[in-house]
Every structure is written in C-alpha cells, then in structure tokens.
Length: 78
Figure 1 (cartoon, rainbow, N blue to C red):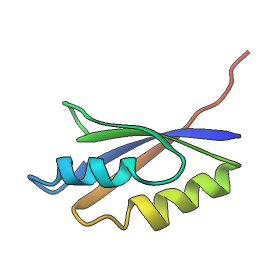
Figure 2 (figure 1 turned 180 degrees about the horizontal axis):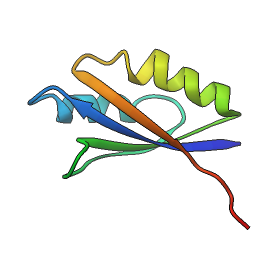
Figure 3 (figure 1 turned 45 degrees about the vertical axis):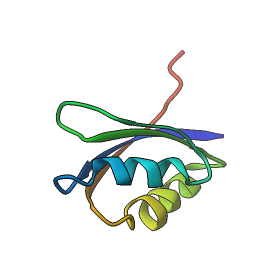
Figure 4 (figure 1 turned 135 degrees about the vertical axis):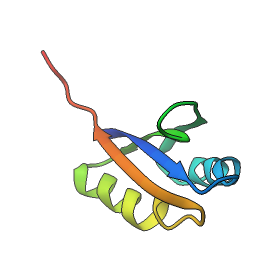
C-alpha cells in the first residue's frame, strides 16, 4: 500500500467545489480546504506509487479549477 499527501492550488473561488470533487475520488481518504501556500490538502492511498501517480494526473489534475498540484509520498522512517 502506498500513500501520499496532495497539495492543491486552485483558481480564485474554486477551492470549495474542487475539494468536494477530490473527496469523491476512490482512494481519497480526506480532502480539506486550508490556509497558507496551498488551497487544499488531500490524503490518498493506492496499491503502489504508480497508482498514486495515475490518480493524481488523470483524476485530480483534471478537475476544473485546479491550477497546480504537489505530491508528497509518505515514507516509513525507522
């Protein structure tokens, strides 16, 4: 199992709708509007890193109003 945090920027006024659409995607465990450098932070899970990448590129980035994403893959540090 792989997991990542996806940090999302949206066009002005689009964060609410984009957050709701992200939350509907299979594998998205949480999606929150936030303050700061990004508009939305989502936590996603998938079978492997390739699945995470496909989810970000084909599903999240294709949502109207999303202008930029940055993905931070979760790593286990002993």
